[in-house]
Image (cartoon, rainbow, N blue to C red; front, side, top):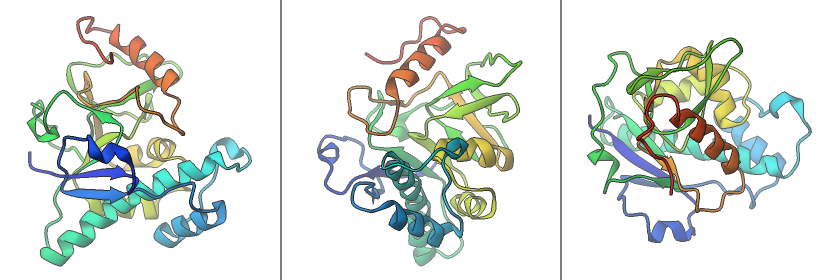
Length: 239
């Protein structure tokens, strides 16, 4: 499968110096530290026509600035590839692999990953991440692509995913539901509207050695360890 690669990273991030993957696009991440909550809200409303709400309506604090900035950065990736390819070729916008800059892979490039045959109806493919079960369901994934059934599981971690039709995803974000944290929004709305799959076992991970100001990596690590015990005891994630 052919796809473009976009890596989201702060413009002055030292991570850019040692990431070996050469992307088609460096996306300068929106910094949650450089803007007020009001300004970040205004930016989201400008690009989507909607306001951001907190999960379970908890009060806004400064930590939410990072979460708004993450959403804006992923929107920027979609907008950038669409704008770039409309300028070059007004008919074709290719699939896009979006990577956050704390990703980790065992290949020189994501294009070298030997992906299993793709589902015919796929619209979003997650190369890494983890799930949590909804009440009454226990996920038992098969090796390869697994459908994200929003009635049975929630799927978390947007560090690495391929979008088949960036225009459709951007339009869906603008059309459906109130905005909240990126992962929660995908679970509430996108997985209902677009055919999404995750790869098991994961081939892209978050680098636990890198600092993160907005992700609970201890919780993520605990969830991944639980899922490794399901049916692939020989597969290992992490160091």
